[in-house]
Image (cartoon, rainbow, N blue to C red; front, side, top):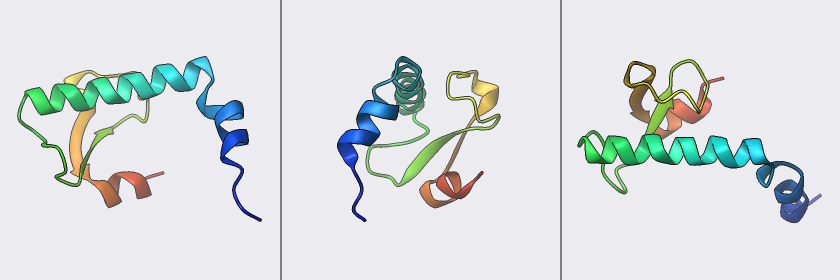
Length: 73
């Protein structure tokens, strides 16, 4: 069965909480770029150690490889 992307967007990605989480993750990435920790296209992700995407304290953020960050549960 193919994925229903429209349903996924309407059900999950367009919710207020999902939008705030996404904006906070993007802000963490922008801050890391400004501090020189990551560059565009470098294959790195900003990992939130406690799993809360809205917690952008520097002590909660670390730079990890894309595969390591996305495999962490």
